[in-house]
Length: 611
Image 1 (cartoon, rainbow, N blue to C red):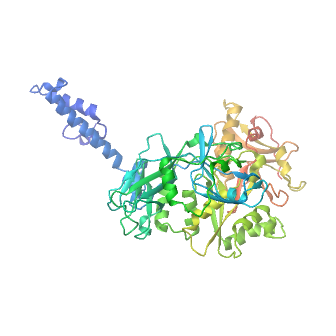
Image 2 (image 1 turned 90 degrees about the vertical axis):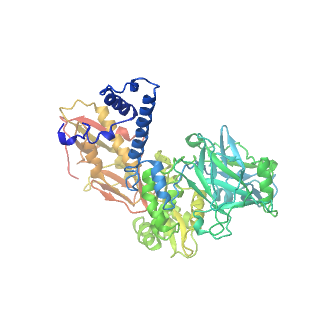
Image 3 (image 1 turned 30 degrees about the horizontal axis):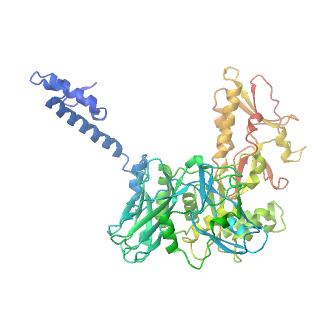
């Protein structure tokens, strides 16, 4: 090593980064042993040895903090969750934590239930084996007949949330400004981010009051009974109360009762029919009964446990996916946008970011457009491309207009949402939409932050089937059926020893994974897929072949069609194509797509024919 790269102690200049406690202790001993004046360093337990341990391990701790904070103090470079969480605290950004699965349901009231208006109290639950699903709020419904009646309004406006509500031990307030309570339920408890409720027993009146969650206390007045919830750097929830200027302050000796939804995580996801034959149970603890009796409206008729037995619940859909919470990259992307909006929804991007953050367990992708873009895009597509007599002749469009649109359309914002739930069976892709209850949940969440004159409509995207397909335009009419006689042929290099099956599986995974990560309005980059496949070891060429004729295309040729209107919206593409904001592609029958990929030897003649 060159002399200039050493310090005065014959150590490399960057040696500080390579030492830990053990290596530094060894170096100190080595230096002391070079001078015979000291010998105690070689005897563990001696004063000299203890002093060396203190120096070495102190250095180790300081080096740890150096490594943790050297780049982690910068918003653009932080990679550790706890550091990113601390940084965005200065922006008043509150990272989203775990979100439990939700379940849609249908309810039928038996003929023996008298016609009347009933309210199911909050936290009522179903126990499905070891899994619970709960209602997070009071649910009111009206039975109007003396026969069995489907309660459609209830099903369309409410969801079941996976988990069980847990009573946190009573907390006695100190009475300080911005008093903060940190929930410590245990390391193995998963708390749903948006289901933490607070009730406060006033020390003066000795009456329970329900307090409301707010996005920011600084948006509240002095008398608002509100609290903030923030997931801190240790992934513990902090509940912060006001100071009598921005939000009401807790008085000394106020009692705080907290109820949170404890999720089972991934294990809580259930399939169709899970609710069948299970009865609704009422949440009933001594403390909650006392609280609920004081806060409930005496004019509301709450349903009894015996009357709950006269309600039949079923679910025809699977539950939504459990969401693990925001990652560091999610926070880096969203925090500046939330800070810029200050929790107000003004632009299209504001609405998109809010839905992606708040409803991550429901929505995979979101695209928001105004009325002008809607008329120039989706509306025009229905009339001109699909040749419909009117816009509302399209069934999904009619459904959304009837259920969610008002009489005035010029102030509409149209939210196209792709559900997180993925259905890979080609036979049910048309039903891969948000349910009315999920749409109403999103609309309700947007209503408190949106501009007063803006009306939100959650719209279903147009799903486009994708498959390999090639045809001869001079002799054939383009139809969906050509995909049944088309294969993707991969030519293996003559010198390659890679197996045909390995190449086939690798190409299949490239195509499958590409369409799993697709977004609304994105370009289908056929060139990117082709390059990834050609970069596979052993692949020399790609050919899209017809099996019932000599028609072929050198490269990847895709058939793209609307499965509901296959005769009016269908095309073939051998180069990159950009889909409009309202279209979302899916790979047709991905389970059997592997069989459409064929690997052949380079010596096989493909017989390419222009088409």
